[in-house]
Image 1 (cartoon, one colour):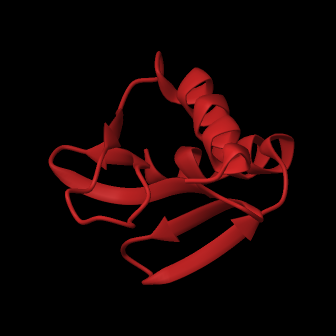
Image 2 (spheres, helix red, strand yellow):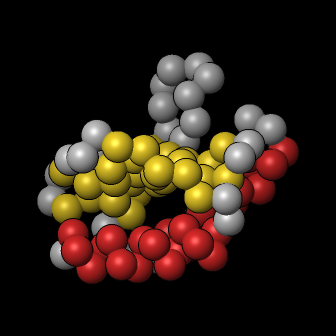
Length: 86
């Protein structure tokens, strides 16, 4: 991971550590990025990872990926999406 990715991952860690339903998943495959996953029961509903461009969100049920350039826009979007997911 680059230093920018490390910094963004640390920002995600601060954002999600105390929030209910979020777990950090670290892949065992080399080269894959750690991701914060939002779970409902045992189902991962979405995951958020840091990359060079910002933040990538994968919506599991929709099989769709979104990209956010900054933490503020990601946090605003998540507030609305998590309300939908319950």
